[in-house]
Image 1 (cartoon, each protein chain N blue to C red):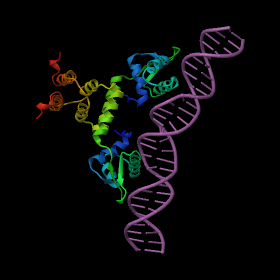
Image 2: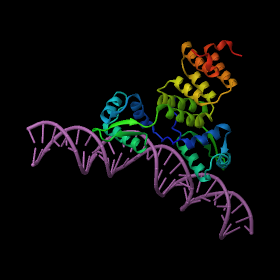
Image 3: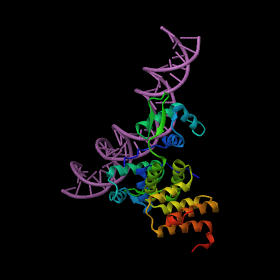
Image 4: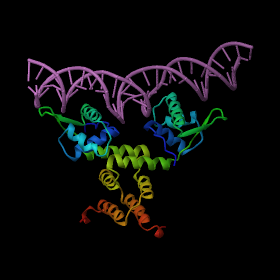
Length: 129
Length: 129
DNA sequence: ATACATGGATTACAACTGTAATCAAGTGAG
DNA sequence: CTCACTTGATTACAGTTGTAATCCATGTAT
Protein backbone atom coordinates (compact mmCIF):
# COMPACT_ATOMS: atom_id res chain seq x y z
CA UNK A 1 0.00 0.00 0.00
CA UNK A 2 3.00 2.33 0.04
CA UNK A 3 2.38 5.36 -2.19
CA UNK A 4 4.06 5.43 -5.56
CA UNK A 5 6.34 8.38 -6.19
CA UNK A 6 5.53 10.97 -8.81
CA UNK A 7 7.65 10.24 -11.86
CA UNK A 8 8.17 12.95 -14.43
CA UNK A 9 8.12 12.49 -18.17
CA UNK A 10 11.89 12.43 -18.55
CA UNK A 11 12.23 10.13 -15.59
CA UNK A 12 9.82 7.69 -17.18
CA UNK A 13 12.25 7.16 -20.02
CA UNK A 14 14.85 6.08 -17.52
CA UNK A 15 12.44 3.83 -15.70
CA UNK A 16 11.49 2.11 -18.92
CA UNK A 17 15.12 1.26 -19.53
CA UNK A 18 15.53 -0.22 -16.08
CA UNK A 19 12.30 -2.14 -16.36
CA UNK A 20 13.52 -3.70 -19.58
CA UNK A 21 16.70 -5.00 -18.02
CA UNK A 22 18.23 -4.58 -14.66
CA UNK A 23 20.43 -3.96 -12.82
CA UNK A 24 22.37 -1.58 -15.05
CA UNK A 25 25.19 0.84 -14.46
CA UNK A 26 24.67 4.52 -15.17
CA UNK A 27 26.70 4.19 -18.34
CA UNK A 28 24.61 1.31 -19.55
CA UNK A 29 21.49 3.35 -19.00
CA UNK A 30 23.08 6.27 -20.80
CA UNK A 31 23.94 4.05 -23.76
CA UNK A 32 20.51 2.50 -23.84
CA UNK A 33 18.92 5.95 -23.95
CA UNK A 34 21.37 7.38 -26.47
CA UNK A 35 19.52 5.88 -29.43
CA UNK A 36 16.24 7.71 -28.92
CA UNK A 37 16.84 10.55 -26.47
CA UNK A 38 19.24 13.36 -27.17
CA UNK A 39 20.42 13.80 -23.61
CA UNK A 40 23.80 14.57 -22.18
CA UNK A 41 25.18 11.81 -19.94
CA UNK A 42 25.05 14.32 -17.10
CA UNK A 43 21.34 14.71 -17.61
CA UNK A 44 20.76 10.99 -17.36
CA UNK A 45 22.80 10.87 -14.15
CA UNK A 46 20.68 13.64 -12.72
CA UNK A 47 17.54 11.70 -13.54
CA UNK A 48 18.98 8.58 -11.92
CA UNK A 49 19.78 10.56 -8.80
CA UNK A 50 16.31 12.02 -8.65
CA UNK A 51 14.74 8.62 -9.05
CA UNK A 52 16.89 7.33 -6.21
CA UNK A 53 15.78 10.27 -4.07
CA UNK A 54 12.16 9.47 -4.90
CA UNK A 55 12.79 5.83 -4.04
CA UNK A 56 11.62 4.69 -7.42
CA UNK A 57 14.97 2.99 -7.95
CA UNK A 58 18.00 2.08 -5.88
CA UNK A 59 21.52 0.84 -6.49
CA UNK A 60 23.88 -1.73 -5.09
CA UNK A 61 26.35 0.53 -3.26
CA UNK A 62 28.93 -2.20 -2.89
CA UNK A 63 29.34 -2.57 -6.64
CA UNK A 64 31.47 0.05 -8.33
CA UNK A 65 30.28 1.53 -10.60
CA UNK A 66 26.84 1.41 -8.99
CA UNK A 67 24.26 -0.77 -10.59
CA UNK A 68 20.75 0.56 -10.53
CA UNK A 69 17.45 -1.28 -10.41
CA UNK A 70 13.78 -0.39 -10.07
CA UNK A 71 12.01 -0.59 -6.73
CA UNK A 72 8.55 -0.35 -8.21
CA UNK A 73 7.05 -2.34 -11.04
CA UNK A 74 6.08 -1.03 -14.44
CA UNK A 75 2.57 -2.41 -14.21
CA UNK A 76 1.79 -0.76 -10.90
CA UNK A 77 3.03 2.55 -12.24
CA UNK A 78 1.07 2.13 -15.44
CA UNK A 79 -2.07 1.39 -13.50
CA UNK A 80 -1.63 4.41 -11.26
CA UNK A 81 -0.90 6.71 -14.20
CA UNK A 82 -3.84 5.33 -16.12
CA UNK A 83 -6.19 5.92 -13.25
CA UNK A 84 -5.09 9.51 -12.75
CA UNK A 85 -5.05 10.17 -16.48
CA UNK A 86 -8.58 8.85 -16.90
CA UNK A 87 -9.77 10.93 -14.00
CA UNK A 88 -8.11 14.08 -15.22
CA UNK A 89 -8.97 13.91 -18.89
CA UNK A 90 -12.06 11.72 -19.12
CA UNK A 91 -13.60 12.15 -15.67
CA UNK A 92 -12.66 8.57 -14.94
CA UNK A 93 -14.59 6.98 -17.75
CA UNK A 94 -12.92 4.60 -20.17
CA UNK A 95 -15.49 4.68 -22.93
CA UNK A 96 -14.85 8.17 -24.34
CA UNK A 97 -11.14 7.42 -24.25
CA UNK A 98 -11.73 4.41 -26.42
CA UNK A 99 -14.03 6.38 -28.70
CA UNK A 100 -11.34 8.98 -29.23
CA UNK A 101 -8.67 6.38 -29.75
CA UNK A 102 -10.70 4.48 -32.30
CA UNK A 103 -11.56 7.63 -34.19
CA UNK A 104 -7.95 8.65 -34.36
CA UNK A 105 -6.16 5.44 -35.24
CA UNK A 106 -5.84 3.28 -38.27
CA UNK A 107 -6.45 -0.22 -36.98
CA UNK A 108 -6.39 -3.46 -38.88
CA UNK A 109 -9.23 -5.86 -38.29
CA UNK A 110 -6.69 -8.07 -36.58
CA UNK A 111 -5.98 -5.28 -34.10
CA UNK A 112 -9.66 -4.91 -33.45
CA UNK A 113 -10.07 -8.62 -33.09
CA UNK A 114 -7.38 -8.62 -30.43
CA UNK A 115 -9.15 -5.93 -28.47
CA UNK A 116 -12.42 -7.75 -28.80
CA UNK A 117 -10.78 -10.87 -27.44
CA UNK A 118 -9.73 -8.97 -24.35
CA UNK A 119 -13.34 -8.05 -23.72
CA UNK A 120 -14.43 -11.64 -24.25
CA UNK A 121 -11.96 -12.84 -21.66
CA UNK A 122 -13.19 -10.27 -19.24
CA UNK A 123 -16.85 -11.10 -19.67
CA UNK A 124 -16.28 -14.87 -19.56
CA UNK A 125 -12.88 -15.79 -18.11
CA UNK A 126 -13.63 -19.52 -18.46
CA UNK A 127 -13.96 -19.56 -22.22
CA UNK A 128 -10.40 -18.46 -22.73
CA UNK A 129 -7.92 -20.16 -25.04
CA UNK B 1 -2.74 22.77 -37.45
CA UNK B 2 -1.91 25.28 -34.73
CA UNK B 3 -0.19 23.63 -31.76
CA UNK B 4 -2.27 23.07 -28.67
CA UNK B 5 -0.96 24.70 -25.52
CA UNK B 6 0.27 22.64 -22.60
CA UNK B 7 -2.44 22.63 -19.96
CA UNK B 8 -1.56 21.74 -16.40
CA UNK B 9 -3.59 19.56 -14.12
CA UNK B 10 -5.17 22.44 -12.21
CA UNK B 11 -5.85 24.28 -15.43
CA UNK B 12 -7.70 21.27 -16.79
CA UNK B 13 -10.27 21.63 -14.06
CA UNK B 14 -10.97 25.13 -15.23
CA UNK B 15 -11.14 24.08 -18.86
CA UNK B 16 -13.65 21.38 -18.04
CA UNK B 17 -15.92 23.97 -16.49
CA UNK B 18 -15.73 26.20 -19.54
CA UNK B 19 -16.29 23.29 -21.87
CA UNK B 20 -19.43 22.39 -19.99
CA UNK B 21 -20.94 25.81 -20.41
CA UNK B 22 -19.62 29.00 -21.81
CA UNK B 23 -19.10 31.89 -21.77
CA UNK B 24 -18.85 32.34 -18.01
CA UNK B 25 -17.61 35.12 -15.77
CA UNK B 26 -14.74 34.47 -13.40
CA UNK B 27 -17.14 34.33 -10.50
CA UNK B 28 -19.30 31.79 -12.24
CA UNK B 29 -16.26 29.62 -12.85
CA UNK B 30 -15.25 30.04 -9.22
CA UNK B 31 -18.71 28.97 -8.07
CA UNK B 32 -18.78 26.02 -10.41
CA UNK B 33 -15.44 24.81 -9.07
CA UNK B 34 -16.27 25.48 -5.43
CA UNK B 35 -18.15 22.20 -5.08
CA UNK B 36 -15.24 19.88 -5.83
CA UNK B 37 -12.04 21.90 -5.62
CA UNK B 38 -10.91 23.64 -2.48
CA UNK B 39 -9.37 26.64 -4.17
CA UNK B 40 -9.32 30.27 -3.22
CA UNK B 41 -11.07 32.53 -5.75
CA UNK B 42 -7.69 34.16 -6.32
CA UNK B 43 -6.27 30.84 -7.39
CA UNK B 44 -9.01 30.32 -9.93
CA UNK B 45 -8.42 33.81 -11.32
CA UNK B 46 -4.73 33.03 -11.66
CA UNK B 47 -5.56 29.88 -13.59
CA UNK B 48 -7.90 31.81 -15.86
CA UNK B 49 -5.17 34.36 -16.53
CA UNK B 50 -2.65 31.67 -17.33
CA UNK B 51 -5.05 29.97 -19.69
CA UNK B 52 -5.62 33.29 -21.44
CA UNK B 53 -1.84 33.75 -21.71
CA UNK B 54 -1.56 30.26 -23.19
CA UNK B 55 -4.39 31.08 -25.60
CA UNK B 56 -6.42 28.14 -24.42
CA UNK B 57 -9.26 30.50 -23.56
CA UNK B 58 -10.18 34.14 -24.18
CA UNK B 59 -12.73 36.62 -22.89
CA UNK B 60 -15.05 39.21 -24.30
CA UNK B 61 -13.25 42.38 -23.22
CA UNK B 62 -16.24 44.59 -23.87
CA UNK B 63 -18.38 42.79 -21.31
CA UNK B 64 -17.76 43.72 -17.69
CA UNK B 65 -17.14 41.53 -15.84
CA UNK B 66 -15.29 39.59 -18.51
CA UNK B 67 -16.87 36.46 -19.79
CA UNK B 68 -14.50 33.67 -20.63
CA UNK B 69 -14.76 30.94 -23.23
CA UNK B 70 -12.55 28.16 -24.58
CA UNK B 71 -10.58 28.61 -27.77
CA UNK B 72 -9.80 24.93 -28.15
CA UNK B 73 -12.18 22.02 -27.98
CA UNK B 74 -12.28 19.36 -25.34
CA UNK B 75 -12.06 16.56 -27.87
CA UNK B 76 -8.94 17.87 -29.55
CA UNK B 77 -7.28 18.29 -26.16
CA UNK B 78 -8.35 14.84 -25.09
CA UNK B 79 -6.96 13.34 -28.26
CA UNK B 80 -3.65 15.10 -27.86
CA UNK B 81 -3.35 14.13 -24.21
CA UNK B 82 -4.29 10.57 -25.00
CA UNK B 83 -1.67 10.30 -27.67
CA UNK B 84 1.09 11.64 -25.47
CA UNK B 85 -0.06 9.57 -22.53
CA UNK B 86 -0.08 6.38 -24.57
CA UNK B 87 3.35 7.15 -25.90
CA UNK B 88 4.80 7.96 -22.51
CA UNK B 89 3.30 5.13 -20.50
CA UNK B 90 2.53 2.38 -22.99
CA UNK B 91 4.98 3.12 -25.79
CA UNK B 92 2.05 4.17 -27.91
CA UNK B 93 0.17 0.90 -27.79
CA UNK B 94 -3.47 0.78 -26.74
CA UNK B 95 -3.73 -2.88 -25.98
CA UNK B 96 -1.73 -3.03 -22.74
CA UNK B 97 -3.63 0.01 -21.53
CA UNK B 98 -6.86 -1.84 -22.06
CA UNK B 99 -5.45 -4.94 -20.41
CA UNK B 100 -4.53 -2.94 -17.33
CA UNK B 101 -7.82 -1.15 -17.26
CA UNK B 102 -9.82 -4.35 -17.54
CA UNK B 103 -7.81 -6.03 -14.83
CA UNK B 104 -8.35 -3.12 -12.49
CA UNK B 105 -12.00 -2.29 -12.93
CA UNK B 106 -15.25 -3.86 -11.96
CA UNK B 107 -17.29 -3.74 -15.13
CA UNK B 108 -20.82 -4.90 -15.67
CA UNK B 109 -21.51 -7.00 -18.74
CA UNK B 110 -23.46 -4.02 -20.03
CA UNK B 111 -20.31 -1.91 -19.81
CA UNK B 112 -18.39 -4.53 -21.70
CA UNK B 113 -21.13 -4.81 -24.26
CA UNK B 114 -20.86 -1.07 -24.85
CA UNK B 115 -17.15 -1.29 -25.44
CA UNK B 116 -17.62 -4.23 -27.75
CA UNK B 117 -20.15 -2.23 -29.72
CA UNK B 118 -17.56 0.48 -30.26
CA UNK B 119 -15.27 -2.08 -31.80
CA UNK B 120 -18.05 -3.41 -33.99
CA UNK B 121 -18.74 0.04 -35.33
CA UNK B 122 -15.10 0.52 -36.05
CA UNK B 123 -14.69 -2.76 -37.89
CA UNK B 124 -17.87 -2.34 -39.90
CA UNK B 125 -19.18 1.22 -39.90
CA UNK B 126 -22.08 0.31 -42.22
CA UNK B 127 -23.76 -2.14 -39.89
CA UNK B 128 -24.35 0.47 -37.25
CA UNK B 129 -27.69 1.19 -35.52
C1' DA C 1 54.55 9.55 -6.40
C1' DT C 2 51.81 12.25 -9.70
C1' DA C 3 48.62 13.83 -12.99
C1' DC C 4 44.75 12.61 -15.58
C1' DA C 5 40.36 10.41 -16.43
C1' DT C 6 36.04 8.62 -14.75
C1' DG C 7 32.22 8.25 -11.78
C1' DG C 8 29.66 10.15 -8.22
C1' DA C 9 28.02 14.33 -5.40
C1' DT C 10 26.75 18.85 -5.39
C1' DT C 11 25.18 23.00 -7.48
C1' DA C 12 22.85 25.84 -11.24
C1' DC C 13 19.23 27.92 -13.31
C1' DA C 14 15.12 29.10 -15.89
C1' DA C 15 10.29 27.60 -16.95
C1' DC C 16 6.20 25.76 -15.28
C1' DT C 17 2.93 24.78 -11.32
C1' DG C 18 0.22 25.24 -7.26
C1' DT C 19 -1.33 28.41 -4.43
C1' DA C 20 -2.18 32.66 -3.41
C1' DA C 21 -1.59 37.99 -1.80
C1' DT C 22 -1.16 42.76 -3.02
C1' DC C 23 -2.01 46.71 -5.86
C1' DA C 24 -4.80 49.62 -8.78
C1' DA C 25 -8.77 51.29 -11.21
C1' DG C 26 -13.69 51.70 -11.99
C1' DT C 27 -18.44 51.70 -9.87
C1' DG C 28 -22.09 52.19 -6.66
C1' DA C 29 -23.57 53.98 -1.96
C1' DG C 30 -24.12 57.77 0.64
C1' DC D 1 -17.82 64.18 -4.71
C1' DT D 2 -15.58 60.66 -1.90
C1' DC D 3 -14.93 56.14 0.15
C1' DA D 4 -15.27 51.37 0.07
C1' DC D 5 -15.87 47.25 -2.53
C1' DT D 6 -15.28 44.45 -6.66
C1' DT D 7 -12.73 43.07 -10.52
C1' DG D 8 -8.82 42.75 -12.93
C1' DA D 9 -3.51 43.24 -13.15
C1' DT D 10 0.71 42.44 -11.15
C1' DT D 11 3.69 40.18 -7.98
C1' DA D 12 5.18 36.30 -4.79
C1' DC D 13 7.25 32.27 -3.62
C1' DA D 14 8.52 27.48 -3.03
C1' DG D 15 8.58 22.88 -5.33
C1' DT D 16 9.21 20.23 -9.67
C1' DT D 17 11.25 19.55 -14.09
C1' DG D 18 14.41 19.81 -17.99
C1' DT D 19 18.83 20.27 -18.86
C1' DA D 20 23.11 20.41 -17.54
C1' DA D 21 28.00 22.08 -15.42
C1' DT D 22 31.26 21.99 -11.70
C1' DC D 23 33.60 19.94 -7.92
C1' DC D 24 35.73 16.11 -5.61
C1' DA D 25 37.69 11.56 -4.79
C1' DT D 26 39.66 7.50 -6.39
C1' DG D 27 41.83 4.26 -9.72
C1' DT D 28 45.32 4.13 -13.62
C1' DA D 29 49.12 5.17 -16.57
C1' DT D 30 53.68 6.74 -16.34
